[in-house]
Length: 213
Image (tube, rainbow, N blue to C red; front, side, top):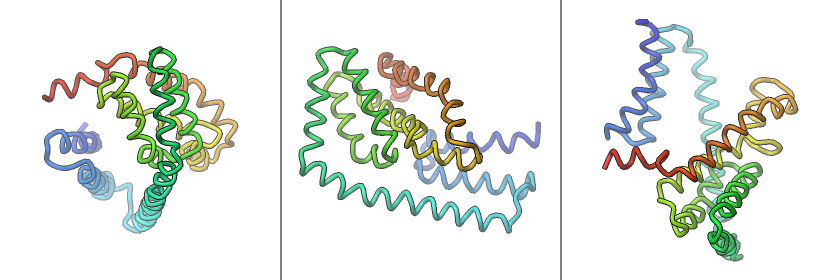
């Protein structure tokens, strides 16, 4: 119990530092990484210092990939705006608000399809503000709209055939893509059910902000 308490301390540090106003989300991530490193090296002794260099290199490489994607999303967003694609998307979704069920299904389908072919970070930066604005105009709270967009795009990232996390997980596990796709089916059903419930039941996402007011 004593040894496991150090591992259990990691999520407490992450959530507690943010909720307590001690650190921002980015700072909390860095603090949590340092706590995890300390726990692995000095408490459990399962991580050797020579192994850390490889982990640091992979972290730098992955971070650089994300920053390159984010940097490229700026010109891409400008291009979509110039072509009128963003405004067309907003007008199309708003035209469906007369039927709440059709609007919800169309929104989930669009987020799902876009999430399967584009990285979630790019989707959130480029399309996220538009979808949040559309849902706000349709009568949804902005917090709920933001949660729906983020969760939906993250679901898309693990969905075949082009989900980024789908390929990454299969590569790490060294398993064929077909096997991963079949194993994902029950989890995807549950995730889409969760997304639907987040949309139709605002209390699932709004109770915590209301408590913290």
